[in-house]
Amino acid sequence: MRAFALAASLFMASGAFANTTPRERIRDAAQVFNEVMSAPDKSIPQDLLNRSDCVIVVPGLKRAAFVVGGEYGRGFAECRNPNGVGWAAPAAVRMEGGSVGFQIGGEEADVVLLVMSREGMRKLMDNKITLGADASVAAGPVGRTANAQTDLALHSEILAWSRSRGAFAGIALNGATIRPDNDENARIYGRAVTMHQIVMDHVRPPAEARPLISTLDRYSSRGSSSADRAQ
Image (cartoon, rainbow, N blue to C red):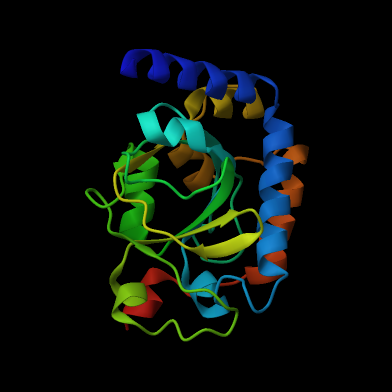
């Protein structure tokens, strides 16, 4: 029965992804982030966004796949340029795995993560990371002007939020993995390219990536570096 459920879940997930293109997923990611940040009383705190090194947006995760641990989400990571000003081209990522306890309710949900350190950014670019094991993760506080000066916010490598049925809240994502989606990146950029190359080698973003980059620029075009934050 479990094997059947897993196979059914993977089939539904692959079918959902087959019905969308990379351009549509980038557009959806931009729309999700804009809608989250345009609600001042229910958005990501501005100071945390300004201090982040990367933003990961995974729109429309499917709840059915959460329960059985199959592949369930595709999205995009946007990291700051190496000089800390502006955002590099988007890199496709996958979210996989998890456990029965890793659920956010509803049939699907949008997930936003902030990577709060250069070390977390390096782990993300190099290989897959398991949240809670390879990188510390915590539920992020909500509210544009919320007091984010807590041990949780200051010491976690990744902060996470979800939006399901209109409700936006922090969420713990222990056990999930995030990895670069090299197949998707090849489709977007027309050649084999790694996440490290996209972020560090100034790969030119395709036209369809502009809405996501401009949305992030609108809310946080400049942020302090990790080194600056450590001083």
